[in-house]
Length: 232
Length: 343
View 1 (cartoon, rainbow over the protein chains, first blue to last red):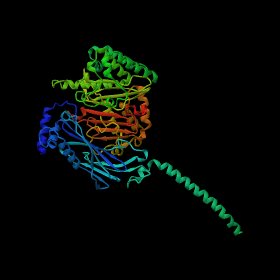
View 2: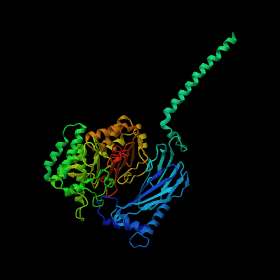
View 3: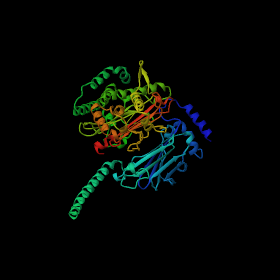
View 4: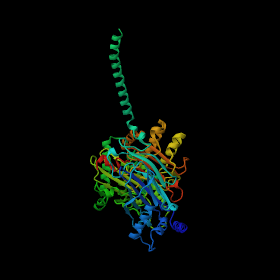
């Protein structure tokens, strides 16, 4: 199957000039992960290069009529959703389909069409791992964690992400996350989350220490007087 | 010679006029804004009613504001006026407006990108109607040119999208897309590299880092394309790489100089304000690299700070990736002047 796809792609490449100025022979799969306190959104944008359309049609166009029906769209979105995996704190988490959109076939023929799929997991935690196993033979991948969800959150919900790791092809990403310093941070991110408060924390400790010393000095002074009287 | 070619052989006097404008001594911010408005009104006055209705949009026209792309205009149609449809006088006035809004080097960069597309057109000629070339760039104005009220100029086409929001003395260039294919070409025996400084300064910086710093800066994965390119408005990703606060003063200066290749496209006074802002946020700015560190090889890099995102991405299309570069320049807090305008 993959060999046949490759032959189609090669043929298409031969028919396309070198100077077409946009993606040709790759299926770009760009994923952005948005983490909130209650959920994790996974937004995947899939853009087939011009030469990739025959390959992709072999996957999507099940009845081989040269068109993409609503049923075929749904089936393909389902396949992509099955080909990706999200784990939170090491546990696989089911992803629900929130939205999807298909560009016109003509746009994809010109290498302009992007298929959009938005998935959501309702479970949240501290450690996330995402992997995309969809059509690895023909794809280039990007995967990133958003600094803040697209619609924004209040300041107290500031997301703190650390220890990002990816494989070389960006098919997978893992990272730890927490929300601001006031909340329960991840196992290894608590100290990072406290970063901006260190100067204030140290100052408070110093003031407290000085207070203790002054109190002790006064207390010792008062306590020592009767001792001296008694000793006399 | 480059400008002469871009504007056409009969436009030598125009070039002289444009460059004379650019070589004028620095003026006050207000007079720069007034001069830009005068150039904009001068351009509009050369148009007939039908053309004016095509080039002018409401300032709050969000759909038009976001109508830009890296792709050729035959694939992603732009609104506004096509340069190829303008008369010589109108085209001259359009270029004068652009020159007034940009720095000398910014204007040169834009001309080099457009001229590169003309070279690409030559390389792909004979394949039906042209997709590339200097005639396929568009100009549009959102709002009405004003020294006080906000307005915006868009100029772009294949591999170029300038979105310049003017708010009184401010000139906001984000988001903007610069790119080049071919990234190196010759005009009358002279080599032109539209994004050559962006390449060379970045390689100089990565090689100025010590081994430990490079270990922080270099990502262990490939980056196939821009992450926050066209169509990704309003998004910001988690930063990676080495923080500028972990660089020494010389390395920080190199980083700022590199940033200046984008921030310095807009006219000098707006660029100075922008660079001051970026410098003030330097300790919170990150530099990430993916790819080999030998100049001449294809490598991706990203500079990301509280008010800044820059990406530079060689494209594996059309052969040698070093000959096809895409870049993006954003301010996540002020793209399209949203902070300055309050929209």
